[in-house]
Image (cartoon, rainbow over all chains, first blue to last red; front, side, top):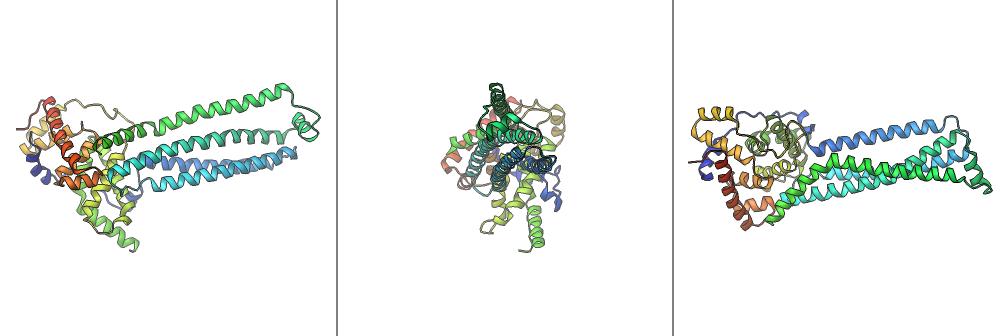
Length: 210
Length: 171
């Protein structure tokens, strides 16, 4: 086989079976994995903002324990700050990741490195935000009911939490961590896993040439 | 540059060089739907990067890099068949090909054989077919010219083996 002999046919090939639909609308549509990840991230941010609005609405409705109302507000603002920080970080990442004007080796290495880094950041965010959200939810529930054991323990220091309640809180926090770990790893593996493996393979192939 | 004139200039350039995009699609994807998705994604990425085109090099040279980067980083939708499954020889297609001229027949088989190369090898063979020198190929890929030459030689041998397995030998 002589590939050089094919060059004439290659040059003459006008790929008549393909059509380029050029219009302004098509310049905004994307089918890539990165594009879909951007959309997912946007949807996640919108649903988070909506849930914050709902939590605030529930927070001000029928307050029965001012102490737990105050605790909920502190936890809520803490998780909001963490969420804003991480989502800003993700926004910057997804804005920069699609720039392909470097050499192919550098672009692919950059995408692989940044994608891997951001999956780890995403896991870190989930680990910090979800248990905090569980605590916020517990405080929110406690603000709606009279949770005398906790109230007494915090106000008067005369009543320790019963061992059973302590175990219950520990188990809840532990369970939230385990569920978070399993769900996030599954989510990252299904969303990014095959894509990252594919990119790492390309990086290895390019590494053999460098 | 005004937004509309920028857009007009971009669309004109893309239209003038659409052959580059078509051939990259045919090299990287063997399914019509995937080719169309890749074509759309390359157009989008070229548009997003258009501000970085300073006119210091030819538009086509700049386009090679963006389009190939997009094709390599492009990941097809999960569907009918897995990514790396080797397709059985398509007998209907073969019959269709045999009716075309000998050159077209060879080129069609070339496109079929190229599907079994990895993404980096596809980029190398594509740039070679586009008459890029070893130095230019090396610059686009970010490798050394010596490596580009050695690897190209291996890819040619690999393609020969692939076409043999497909029961077709270029004459």
